[in-house]
Length: 125
Image: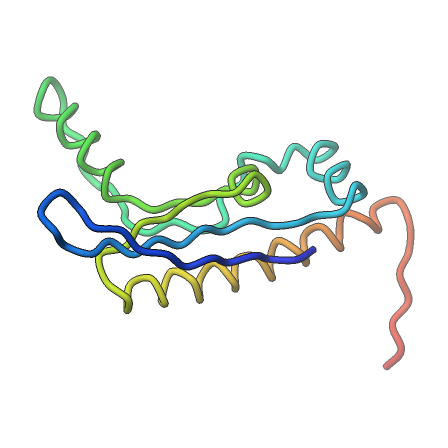
């Protein structure tokens, strides 16, 4: 598996710079098979932001919409298919990039473990 990160930027309507990070995992056919076999596509790899109180009615709906607009999350399917993440500044983008890398390493470990179910693996110590 390879993790491909691409940085870019654009200007908002107000002229402020928005930093963009495109993330995508290039995976082998065997890894695709394991993702499908173990139904890992919806597994959350990274999430920024947490909604504790959703509320009800129109206020709750507005709260949920604002949360989803500000929340950054990446699951396995999005990582495999590619996802664009927009950040307000370079520091946020670098922090997200670092956490996506760590999540991709964990994801690779999960795929490695999935390869050996029903088999055995020997380690030299």
